[in-house]
Length: 457
Image (cartoon, rainbow, N blue to C red; front, side, top):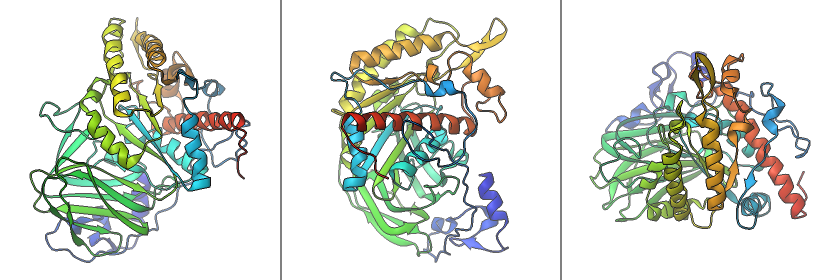
């Protein structure tokens, strides 16, 4: 956001984007009006940021792509543990990755998490590096509303007049939750505006916009992209069925839509911003989620989403919201995750599932800041459940440095973690995103060696 404000401050007085003065920071303001009006071209003069992660690895043989903060070598000592029946858990994923080049394939990863990755912390840097190596442009799946919209570096996101329901909040009304754990109902004149962001290499533009919805009736709406005038259109009715509305053009910087008189049966789920072959990492983070509420996403609707998205890897990273200073929560939490992991399998049958353990979390123990004792216990329990369910597993607690890591992260300059000793800063997300990129790229090398594939140059 600071980069955006700085860039806008350099533009001439009176310049507008989409018919609204820049100084008011409301790029698609005119889409909230009842009468469609012309839109000024979207300005591309914001400074491109190059402070993005590097992929530097002897085993991958890839060239450096940028700069990252100095990190401890302990970050690179872990691997994905494979508890699938035939120990080939990532083979189908990397086969799909190889086909990006040979068959112009689109590869998708669904990442279920909590506040540890909300706002694209960690995942923004991971996505950007993998897209630099494997291809793709665009942030992928985005929600209709977001508690952390102003916190993101991957997207400029504004919205008004939506009723938001999630698996954690307002979950008792029997709402049909979407794949990201949310469902949205528009009030009259509800609007959403998405605009590319320049902090990363691959989030400023995209060529395809897809909107996911359900409706029993045809629903009129108004939409626009970049410098095009607002256009009236209709979401076709498909009762009881997930539907998709899409728009393609060679390149777009921004898109917005408004519902003046929405039908009471209309449900919105989210959108996808992307550009053809490459890898897309969809962030399905829900603040406060321990994992059990994922069972509110019905397998039938999850499979409808998967029919559109065709996910190649399912990632589940949870646990921070179950960590306590005591060890009395392990039994109930194991039972909850056991059911959740079985539910994930029903939602995505036949798909490889990677369980990422809880991260380090610190608190006061005998007056001193230290890793809470339930963290390593939950990590061990999650590994055991991954083994039991035949999933892949990554030990994030030890992978990020083990006991005391969050305290050390928070004390570094620039700080890699907040003083809650639970959540990463953007700089910490950069370090951890680099770590995960290294893990995936090293695993790709092993896949190629096993299958006698030669990396392209």
